[in-house]
Length: 359
Image 1: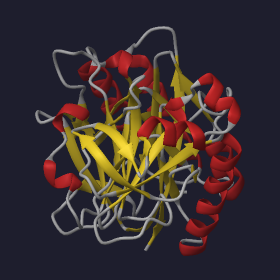
Image 2: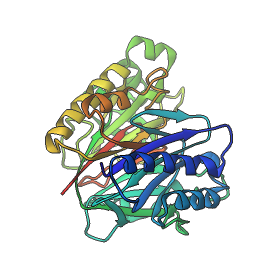
Image 3: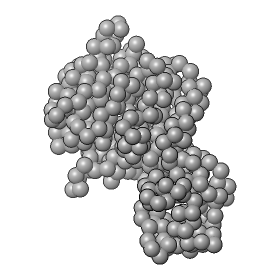
Image 4: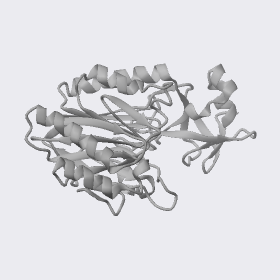
């Protein structure tokens, strides 16, 4: 064993939680014959936003190494469980041939973490081979902390590679298309007025299942927009943009999370737990076929996709542990996901999973 994880929670955001998480993971490695840790991937809940440095110092001392990297997040999980709504620390400790190293230009894929307000434009450009997560700023006045080499990063973002490994990354959007693509006829900025021959809102409501239409469960609805020159077939295709519905108006307007232009193709899609779980299962089967003997997994889930979506349990996590029993997994619930693609996509309500195996 060259990688191990641990998850520790408590009532207060104390440095001891980070220390205990690292020690418990390190103890698993030492029991398996490892001599020492060489690096640590450490996630803390956003309760630690004002107290990061003492937690990092405690984690570095427990691991006896200086390469401690990670970020704050809304919630955390490992292969053994998840924590939301209380202070927690989750650690993945590396030993032997696998280690965390600073990401270099040209290396792919790159583990990328950032505060939402500090997202570099180049992370969302065509050809970007990054995967990871964004998190909303814990305080309106300052970006949330991200750290590397045991210290907070001044620019609130980091890029890492796992030396000694090969990787495979997959995306689960959890979406089921409700409509055929229709042209955007009238749009003003983020507000879509007319779609095909209907108002945007009429088009959406007529497509929704009855229960969701009556309860106006629009937070489960996403607009799938094909880039110019592409036919819209599957939401997970790299040339599709996934835009959450922000608001609707009695005038038939649907407000989306980004601007559109007349003539673009748009289809409505919905997230439903059973369909999302099956898609996650299919995604992980395919991922395992690409990398059949993984040494570790990293998962980045949306805060709106985990236990809040599945009625109190994280079915995506359960699917991972069924497909890859015994594989160490470290994950976080964030406000945005990053997936490698030709479109450099930034996502919401999705799950990005990366598997790594020793070379």
